[in-house]
Amino acid sequence: MSATQPLPADESPDTDSPQSKEARLAAYLRERAEAGDMYFKSKFIAEEVGLSAKEIGALIVKLQDSVDDLSIERWSYTGATTWRVERTA
Image (cartoon, rainbow, N blue to C red; front, top):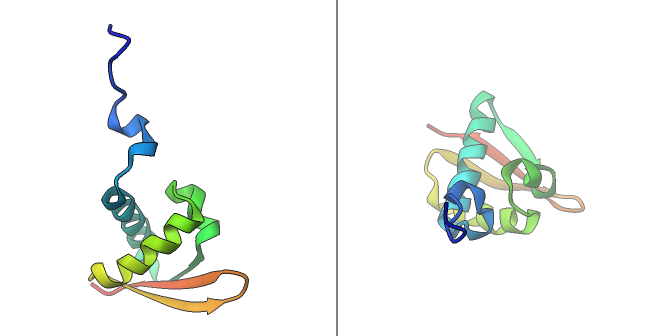
């Protein structure tokens, strides 16, 4: 076995592309919103999604315009933005 053998993609999280991070967040939101409306703050789901709260904040704005099966809206701001997510399809 060679010492220069690369790690499998799933073992190198630092090389996640923005598209894969966006897809991971969208999949998480779809799953959680399956049972109905979901309200969250980025800092509380960051560890579950494997992203920082800052990354989630940036990606959620992109997802608002790019994901057709989720309705994502800024719900309130109390110390941090609370987002509301609902399945539309």
